[in-house]
Image (cartoon, rainbow over all chains, first blue to last red; front, side, top):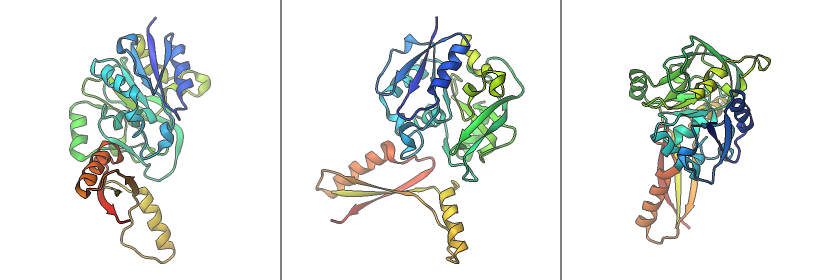
Length: 215
Length: 80
């Protein structure tokens, strides 16, 4: 069975949810500890879960980006393995430069915790099936996507804007909720697909993302 | 030698902390045209030569302390 590597840093707190979501689609998760490196061929995809790695010290994701596990993840990304960063995981991927841009404090300075509707803008390794709108929960204080004007233009031109908010909850530039790299194997998303895996959770649209791992 | 690293959000990046402080100052009749909030990092570098210490601090700052996309920085020698 395909194994999915789930990264864990001190302060990661969505790791169990991601583990469960991976199991829910019939795949086998395995922890990847931040102090360790790994053989990239041992896994078929990787998830960097949300939380508060290193207590958000210095800048969200900045210290986690320098952890040994990220060296191996960089190799996996370069070899085309699917990599998904969720929330703090997205911030870590930006700080590692595996994804463009940065995530800064929400425009209205408030933590936002609610369901949002998203428009997928492009097909990636993490949403192989086309959907017009998906509904997922957000929960973050620093999720406002930021990139310089020319970079934003380049993201649209190169189809690297992955998802946009229907109603912008945090002041993200151009309503951006998620981006991907040029090769479309590395994706980052502020909303949490692992918290939307069944109707009793309030919605099951997160399955669209997780089931893409089934190939 | 001690080197101080002053880090500020870039002007084009919305500084929500600065805006919050500005609002409080205004509410208490302390008018300023702008207030920006950053951070200060002090590095104790085992180096007596000022230019060498500054070069090390620059390398460290650019390695992790600041994000060039959203911040600017300045170095200063901290007098003992």
